[in-house]
Image 1 (cartoon, one colour):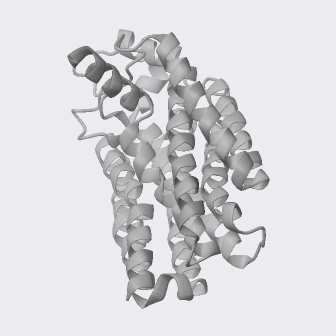
Image 2 (cartoon, rainbow, N blue to C red; image 1 turned 135 degrees about the horizontal axis):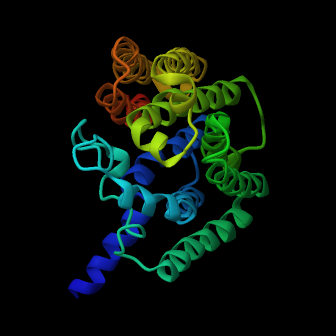
Length: 309
């Protein structure tokens, strides 16, 4: 029993279960933007597909990055501030570390896990929406491209934004094929939130380690200061587009939802972004990353509260 439990924990960590679970808020927001009263059966199937899809996508990332993750483990220098990042603060991204690189999970098991979940997501999306299925496939291809560019281009940060948009707006297209301004605002929020709130801050926290491993990111190429400015500009756009979306979709968000969207944008994006702009260190970058990861779930809770009250 203990061996099976350890394997389950390793699979959960392969999928970065905490991040994957938080990320589910994104397509669910897309669903509520498309319809405030989704049919229960269709929503249940859609949610199961979302879980499978996001857990598969995060697992795929670790599978593709396994060689680099092993080098991170082998090249980590005690006391350097790299590695687990504990010297800089708690890192939500690396909670549990990478089980493949750590030898706690076999490559075969990881491939079966990611492949099985991906197959479930593909089959479910084929039933629900071919557009959403195309977005899922596009997201997988973008994930592979992003990992392939690890040592080649710092501008893969833009791929990360598009990748997140694919996963988020899939929830919208599961329930409608109509396209309007709200979808554009939603996509803009998701792309800039990912780039400014997660991708660049995560790279800032790992800048020393990435430099040692030859990984090209905005911080390793353009330096922490310029990268922080870029991230903060993205955060401002994300905050404005999030609030604009809440106002444009007021029937779905309600007064409570609009207020929560505005407060979360200010407290979880702009405020920690200002701190990182003033001090683009690993510690402030990790704080921003952790805060930003909770912003879409907070917006979702506000939206649900707005629908009820």
